[in-house]
Each structure stands twice: as structure tokens, then as C-alpha cells.
Length: 81
Image (tube, helix red, strand yellow):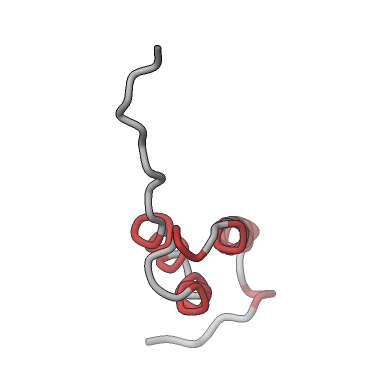
């Protein structure tokens, strides 16, 4: 498997990639947690505390939250006069 690299052993490109990936993960999770906090419980499938834990799973959690947890708003089908 090879020797484990330390941060100082990585190239600038590798450090930049890791930093960018970490930033994306942090922003996705922050956006999902903010959305979860804003939504009323009736617009979330399942308990909010469970979705808060799911969001903590790297990359997959926030994506699953945005894809599955949110209940769409009721749409009006009536026509305006």
C-alpha cells in the first residue's frame, strides 16, 4: 500500500486539491444544515435530527438531503381571474 504521506510531503497541487474538496464539503454541509433549520418539520421527510446526522456524512449526506428529504411545496392548480 505504501508509506503514508504527511501534509508537508504533498505537492502544492495536491494541497490545493484537498483544500478545494474540503471547502466544497463544508459549503454543501453548511447549506444543507441552514436549509434544514429554516424548513418547518412538515416539509421534511422524517425527523429533522436524523437528517442533521445524515448531512454530516461527507459529500453524500448533503446531496441525499437535497435529493430526498425535502417535501415539495403544494402547488396551486387554480387559474387566476
